[in-house]
Image 1 (cartoon, rainbow, N blue to C red):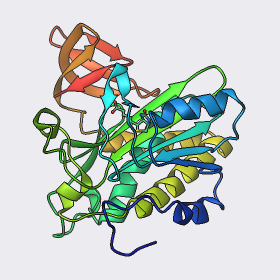
Image 2: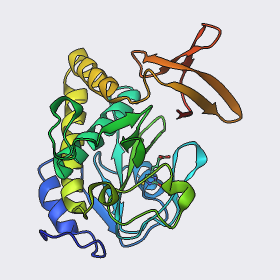
Image 3: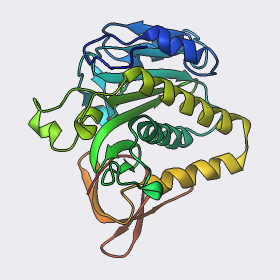
Image 4: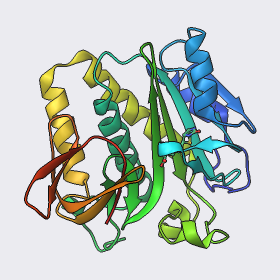
Length: 275
Ligand code: BTN
């Protein structure tokens, strides 16, 4: 792996393979220089009986899909776009929590941004947080989106992380999203991020699979502590329906508890949240 990341270089897949060989998740690894959607391809593999942990990644996702039917913009050679084939033995809301938390912790570990609990003068103003349910943001601008697609038989965990380059050519998107490089001020190794992320996902997945309620409770609390949404006045969007209120808390399943202006409490199970 090169020490100085070159934003234009193709992903060093062998560097990733060398690490994931020892993990439950991350292999076999299918790499494509370009592909429509890694999630779509991973779902095809799952339907054909792919092994748990099968990973699909690319340097250019030409038809990336986001939550709620949206598109996910490609920055060729500058993002991480990964999809994992999983057969989880636990409810999928724990996958929502584990994946967002793994991404947030990975960003801190690789970039040196400190968690809020251990702030130092270095990058002191940057905060890696989670917008409910699983957008990872740095100081309120989105750097990562997660799309989990489940069926009765499998779950596809798709993660898109804006690493290098810039979104400046898309002013509407740039107003609410960014890349790690733009935030930190220098390019970041995509391989280092991929390796750290897969290690952390693997560890969360093992705990959720092998341990009991204590692992779930610990995960839920760590995810909850990262939610920048809590305490904010927000508008939730579910299709055409909008609900306004104060994001009061999350329940045990990770659903958002919204206190409406008339004092009633609504449980928001899906959709988008705007502060
Ligand atoms: C969102 O924020 O709406 C979720 C975006 C998820 C994007 C990732 S990139 C890898 C995987 N493949 C896709 O087509 N989508 C996900």
